[in-house]
Amino acid sequence: MSVQETKHLNDDAILWTLIDPDKLKASEKKHVQNCQICQKKQTALQQELTGIKQLSQLFLPKPKHNLRPVSIEKTVSPAFLRMKKAFVYAFMVLICVGGVFGLWPIQNKSIDHPAIEQAKNSIENMMNVTDYKINNGTYSILPVTFQYIVADEFEILSTPFYDYVFPVSTLSVDDS
Amino acid sequence: MDQIAGWVREAQTGNRYALNQLIDHYQNDIFRYVYYRIHQQADAEDLTQDIFIQVIKRINTVKDHTLFKAWLYKVARNRVTDFYRKKSILFFMGTTGDLESDTCETGENSSPETEINRKEFTMLLKSLTSNLSKWEREIFLMRFIDDLDIKDIAQALDKNENTVKTHLFRAVQKFKKQKKLREFLQLSRR
Image (cartoon, rainbow over all chains, first blue to last red; front, side, top):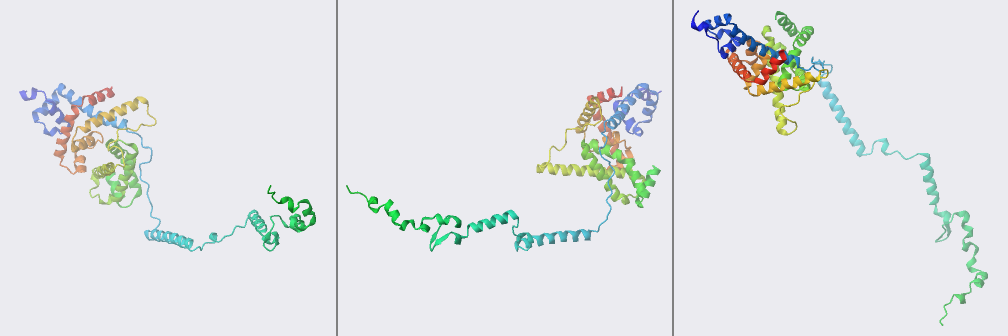
């Protein structure tokens, strides 16, 4: 046995036995085959490197979703999609133009709820000024049915009784 | 391997069964690939779906049916790169949070002990990968987490096999300096 064959392999040579044994010299190869110490070193390193793979597999999380891609079937042609898009844009433009020119029925719809209609009528009745007109240029705040109590209707102001109760002289200011 | 090549051939002719077989066969591997690069479950699920959509669209471009696995990982890698590119743009625009999330989503049915171990493993793995160069990190993860052989890695990354081996050698050298991770691996083996 030569000196070369009895000499233990250094760390780099041990490493090369794992990566590319062909890089070793024939004497080094022969030594590894017979030397238990070098074999032990080689095995230890091999196990550490194998351990990386085992742990990476062990600690790999399980996928939450199926990893197989969902196949997308071509059911519609691109021309159809382009047409669809054009229709959508045309429809939107039509809505806008109609809105600007007041073409849509909702814009002309009157309020026809019965309660609102009734309130509207009563306001109109209240505002019918002919019922409140007493004389030309004179209006009463009272409805027609109560207008008879207005003083002028009974000509109170022009009667002698009124002059008797409220004589004109009493209304004059005394100079003294 | 012949079966995979057969499914690829059939899928290229429009056979849905073959395509589904391919997706079912690789979906967990691709999910693991994505998850250990972005560390966010929901995003990893979405990206996995995106990757398979790309696969469905481009499967006809696979010329050598035996190289499907390498091609699939190349698609996955490109998609993850796109994800980070988009995220970095959003980050600079101020519409997203950190570039790399520190949160690790918890499994619904796992025990507290498993959750603690999971978080520690993720933290130690991030600590290791932060010390590696871009190619060292990618090759190390592909070799020891995704369990790809050197040939597949070289094809997925469009690199020479010797270059891949050299990057891997350097990455493992750096791994050997990560005492905490090595202790964690030794303890978990017991």
